[in-house]
Length: 103
Image (cartoon, rainbow, N blue to C red):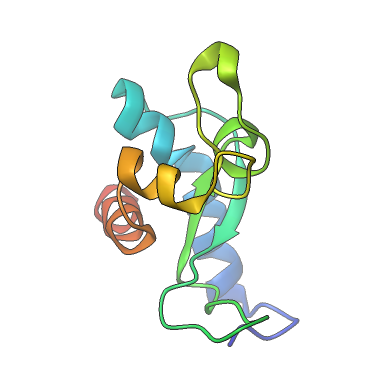
């Protein structure tokens, strides 16, 4: 489970992930660099828990919180739902692996 305070190495890792940009935009359009928000993956976590700081991905607002129908984006926490997000872009674990390969 993630602690409230990040260590310097964790802060540096999260910054690199954020600089990379939205991983779902990369899957959708083949382009890195879309500004986004940090999303803690939920793989192997219990209810109301989040992963450690090294297990984060970057998602733009349209892929994170609110479906962006104009841009054809499904948000992981949006109205369309987690299953639709996973079916379209891959599992959180797959997106994490893609992120880690590219930072």
